Every structure is written in C-alpha cells, then in structure tokens.
Image 1 (cartoon, rainbow, N blue to C red):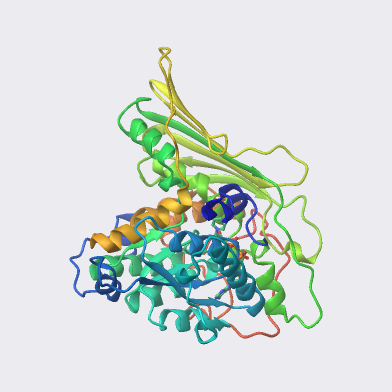
Image 2: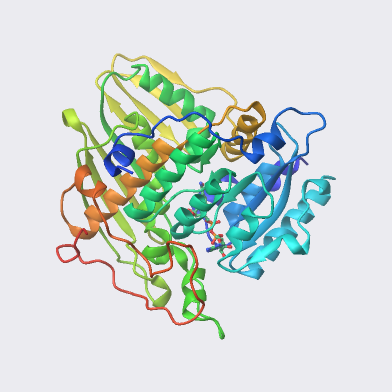
Length: 456
Ligand SMILES: NC(=O)c1ccc[n+]([C@@H]2O[C@H](COP(=O)([O-])OP(=O)(O)OC[C@H]3O[C@@H](n4cnc5c(N)ncnc54)[C@H](O)[C@@H]3O)[C@@H](O)[C@H]2O)c1
C-alpha cells in the first residue's frame, strides 16, 4: 500500500479538524512586486539536485493538519525533503504526531525522511522560534489561527519558505501583518503557499479556468454552502490552566479561531472570491447566531452564518455555513452567469458547466490530491528557483471571511472600506509576539449580540 494513503483523508482534514505600509494599498490593492534582494537559505540548499543537501522542513503545530502537511512535504514529488524539527505548544500533541509519522515512514521503508532527534523537538509558545532557528529551509505553519501572524512574520524574517494554513489571521490588524510578511517574502525570493487547498485541486482549476474564460458568461451570483456538523469539545481536565483548556478548545473561542465562517467555511468564501477573480465586494450583510452549543466548552462563537456579499454591477454571493448536529450536510458551490451555470460538488467529486442553451461539460479527468499538490508545488518552486506567492489572494479571501463574520456580529451592512480600516484586535496582549502565559486567562462565553456589538 502506498503510504500517501495513510495521511488523513481530505475529508477528514477538512470536515473534522481538531482532534484526531499603506493598508489600502496592501489589503485593498495587491502586493507590490519586488525583485529578490537576498538569496534565501532554502534556495542555496534546494537548487540543483546532485550533491545538494535535502531541504529541511520544520513543523509548527503538530495537530491533524500539521501531521498531514508534514507527511505531504516528505512525499513531495520533487523529493529530497527531510522533516528536521517539530514544535507544538503541547508535548502530547507533538509526541502523537511524531510517533505516527515515524511509524508510517518506517512501514513504507522511508525512515530517512525524518530526522527529528530530541534536541529538535520543541514545546511551548516559543517553539515556533526554536523550529525556525533550527536551520530549516521550509516551515509548515499549521498551529491555530490566532498565532499565524506572529509565526509568518518570524519565518519570513528568518528567510524560510512557508506553507501556511488558513486562516492566516483572525482580525484585520493581524492580517495586515501577514500581508506585509507576504510582500517581504516576495522581495526576498521566498515561496509562500497557502492552505486554501481547493485552489490546488486540478478539477477546480479546470472549472474555474473555464468560468474565467467566459463559459457561463458574466458572473451574476455565487452560492456556496458549508453545512457541517459540530466540532469536538474537550472537557476540562484536572491540572489544566485556563490557557491550556481554552487552547485545547480553540475552535470555539473567536479570538483563537476567528469563528467558523473565517476558519472552516473560509474555503467556501475563498472559492467565491476565486470565482470573482479576487475582486473586492462592495459590502456584506449577514445573519448568524448560536443555537445548538451548550456547556462551557462551547466558548463564544456562532454556530451558523448566512452572508450576502454585494459586488459592483449588482452581482451577489451567498454563503451559508453552520455546524449543527443531526442536520443536513452539504459542501457545494454554485456559480450562475449570464450564459449558464457551474456546479461544484466538492466531495462527490462532480464538476459541471451547463449553458442555458443546453451545452454540458463535465470534468472527466483523473483529479489529484490537493493537499499533496500544495506541497509538491512549494517544493518544486524552491528547486526551480521560481518562488510562488499566494499572499495577495490569500489575504483577500481571509478578509472576506472577517467581513462576513463582522457583518453577522454587528447586524450591520459593512463596506469593504470599513473592514479595511478595522482596528479591532482579538485576544489578550502578547498575541503580537505569539507568546502567552499558562495560567489564569479571562474568557467569554457570550456570543456577540447583533445590534449591540460594534465594529471597531
Ligand atoms: N486546509 C484544510 O483543509 C484544513 C483542514 C484542517 C485544518 N486546517 C487548519 O489548520 C490549522 C490547524 O488545524 P488542526 O485541525 O490541525 O487543529 P489541531 O487542534 O489538530 O492542531 C493544532 C495544533 O497546534 C498546536 N498549537 C496551538 N497553538 C500553538 C502555538 N502557539 N505554537 C505551536 N503549536 C500550537 C496545538 O497544540 C495543536 O497540536 C487551523 O488553522 C485549521 O483551520 C486546514
């Protein structure tokens, strides 16, 4: 059995995560192009094949997705990649990931792809710095979202190529830092690949390319949905500080996850943005709330959102997302144009375009493993010395998620201009550096109340 199949399946990773400058010029207008100023260490290590040492990969955040990404990095098509260092805030999470990877590699006879001795296993909030400073060329940033701006900023500062999971930030000030780091990565000739995995799916790429070439005419409406079940909770255990308990239930605290529109259904929002060629909308209006979660681990997030994004020219996008038990499940996208429609059944998988005149196109190619593709393309770009940078559109999609969330929290119509100027920082002081203390931590169990909550 090829061990690629032992990694978490795409469905497991997506649906069951968890256990198992000038601001306008940046966020609004795209990243400045820059010529490489410095030769990053990973280019020195990665370019050319024979006689060059393998690319060293560091993993920050050894949960479900991080373990999958590490596996995929070690199996990148271009080869010559070794897992070199691992970091997690918790020792048990690091250990379960490490032992899983070690066992699976050993079974397929590829143990040499992992070289993570005890001195390169780091725990605690500072572990990201230790991993990045251990001499890695590529870092996989797969910890929980709130820490990503600090992690990305440090990785780029230290000259690492980056794979970063979505979302990249939970608030707009954090997203500005990510965008600045992405621009800096471009200047330094570093690759930056995002975890918006559907953009790495060959079926989706083919369909979106057809849509952008006019197959359905002018885009008038997009409807995306993410009707999922609830995510797991971890009851407090003896000896757990507030910090540990909240971190282990991070999905349900909005300052850590950004809430599920920005964290989980952000994939749907990203495809909506892709359909609109990453054009900014004019504004968003939304409803949302929390009806089904109970108990203290429920935190302070919503369990449902319905957002309408309005675009110039009258086009609209509708995103429905919720995490309810015993309810209908679907994760599909529908694009309606002046000449026809595109239908994407993400997990079927089924990709079709139908014109109103009766023509029909259905994707009948092979398809790919989009999670593997992300790491294949990252490693190939380094080997070829042709850096890739997802910065502009990944920040745009992230901001759309925050916009929809804030529209639901406030109950107001929020313009793109207003969200660009938001100064609300989620989380306690210390988040800028990515380091918190274990101990007492103030926390909320109150969801925002529309009409009362203010956009800051
Ligand atoms: N693209 C996808 O399809 C996909 C799928 C699943 C998850 N994700 C994303 O990946 C990220 C991780 O999700 P997951 O499902 O693996 O969650 P998880 O809870 O399984 O793993 C997160 C890990 O990060 C660790 N961690 C938390 N704070 C840390 C810090 N400051 N420094 C180092 N480690 C820290 C946790 O201890 C945990 O081991 C999230 O942003 C999530 O949205 C993406």
